[in-house]
Amino acid sequence: MIAQKVRISPLVGYIAAGFLIGPFTPGFVGNSVLAGELAEIGIILIMFGVGLHFSLNDLISVRSVAFPGAIVQIFFTSSLGFMMAKYMGCKTFSGVLFGLCFSTSSTLVLLRTLEEKKAIYNKIGKIAVGWLVVEDLTMILTLMILPVLSSLLNDSNFIEKSFFSIFIRTMFTITKISFFIVLILIFGKKLIPYLLLKTEETNSRELFTLSILVFSIGIAYASVILFNVSFSTGAFFAGITLNKSKLSQKAAQDILPLKDAFTVLFFVSVGMLLDPIVLLTYPLHILTTLLIIVFGKMFLISILIRSFGYSYKVSFGVSINLAQMGEFSFILSKIATNLHLFSQEIQNLVLSGAVISIVINSFLVKIIDFDFCEE
Image (tube, rainbow, N blue to C red; front, side, top):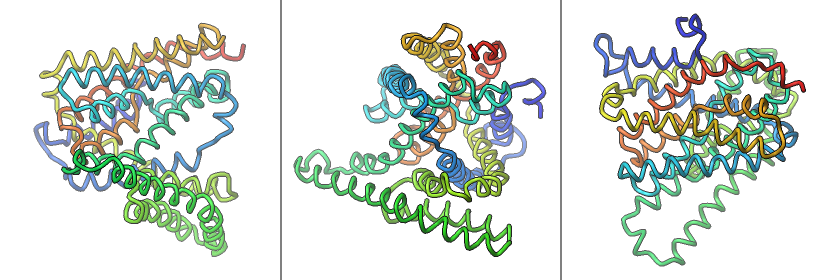
C-alpha cells in the first residue's frame, strides 16, 4: 500500500515486505523454507501465464525492429555483465548467466506501466512488448538448457571424456527436449483443451480451476522427472497448450487470483534473501550494476531503435520502459544458486540491482508523455 501511495511498482513493496520478515532484519523471521516452496509455485504460475498469453502476432508486427534489436541488446548487455562477473572472479559459465540476468526486463513492470498509461497498443507499447517477447524467449531457452549444462559442468570427468561421448550425450539431451516440445505442442494442444472442455461441462468452477492447476504443475513436474527440463520451462509449455484455445480466456480469469497471490509470495521470498550487508560491502559493484541495467541499457536500446528510423521520442519511450531487471532475472539467479553456479553474494548482487533498478524505473517512467506515440 505504501508503494502504491508513493507511485512506485508494487513489486518493490512485496520485496520490501519480504526483507522485513527475512533473517537479516530484527524482529519476526518468516519461514524461508516454506517461502521458497511457495515461490516455486509462483514461478510455475508466472511461466504458465507467460505461455498462456504468448502471442506471435505481437512479435511479428514489430519483427523488423524487435528481433534484431533485442538480440543485439541482449548480447551487449550480457557482455558488460560478463566482464563485471569476471572482474569479480566468477567462472566463465557463471559469468555468462550473470550477464544474462542483466539483459532481461520485467514483464510485470512493463505491462503494468503500459496499462496505466493506456499505451499498450500504440507505437511504444507494441515495440516494447515485441522486444520483451524476444527477451523472454531467450531466457526460456536458457532455463531449458541450464540443468543440462550444469550437470555437464559438475561432471568431474567432463574434461577427460572424449569429444564423441560429450557430443552423444548432448545430442541425446537435445533429442529429449525436442521430444518433450513436440509432445506438448502436438498432443498436449489437443488433449488438454479437450479434457478442460469436458471439465467445464460439469459447470463446476472449482473443478475447472483445480484442473488448470493440475495441468500446469503436473506438466512442469513431468518435464523435470521425465525430460530433465526445468519447472519453469515445463510450465511455460503447459500455458502454450491452451494458448489461442476457446478456453484460454476462461483459464486466465480463473487462474489469475492464484497466480497473483503466488506471484506476490515469489517476490516476498526474493525479499527475504536480500542481505543489506551487500550494499555496504559492494557499493561499487551495486553502482556498476545499476549503470549497466538502467543507463547503459536505456542508452543502447534508444540507439538501436533510432537506427531503425524511429523518432527520438519513440526510441526514448521504449528504452526507458525496458531499463530495469525483472522476474526472469530473479528466477535465473535462484535456479543458478540452487545449482551452485552462483554464490550467495552473487545472487544478492543480482537481487539488489534488480530491486533498485525497478525503483528507479518506476520514477523514470513518470516523465514519459505517451501521447506522442500516436504520430
